[in-house]
Image (cartoon, rainbow, N blue to C red; front, top):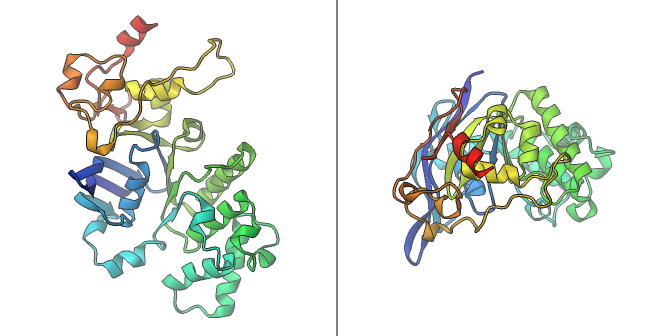
Length: 332
């Protein structure tokens, strides 16, 4: 596979009374054509701001302060606004959180899909646009797409609205799809259907997917690689198998330990004490050290960088205590 997207040193800040505070702070990532990259972490860790930064949709008082977002070698952050609009929704598309609030309640779903198509292809007439909108709804397996075309968001179930959002995102057959919590608030049956649909559409079109979620189970099922994000930074990344089989950051260990398993015999799940620190009150050194059971004095003083760990060359972790095997065995 060839590289499609590369993020280098991305830093997005928000202006507050105490000055500018970072929501995304020095993120480096790469996405290859046709692969699925999962980005996981607790609420408030910067996942959604990262996705909006890629799309250049960060609203004031936020701004992208540093870094590069290279799409097929071209830095999106340096493009004129018109050139970026030509890429956004066409070459790079996004499924936003909460389809009920992302869709316009005053317009039919067909009109909203056709509007997205018309923005990138002015040559299409009304009849051709309608035919393509029906095709887009059929592609995401919405029954009776001709009738659904004239319905409004409030007339559809949560799963149907999510399918409409996917249809809009894929209307122009993008090379990269960013899916921000695409299964939030859906029951497990509908969630499985949406994930299976994304996988089928990816195999059909060859697009790459950035899947943003807090659910490690979803990542294990769908992703090729995974990046764990904490307090605006990537703390561990690697192939999904290597990271799940041999997690090397205490935060990743905590996330995995909080997942219930059928074979689990202990009465209570593991829990990570505390919460993600706000961007205006980040601790010194490793940002996870106040919550880390393996922390020692150096962790409060030294800011660790991502470095290779384990047998897989693509597995990297930002932790002074890695590899963790000796500490895990002691704790056990």
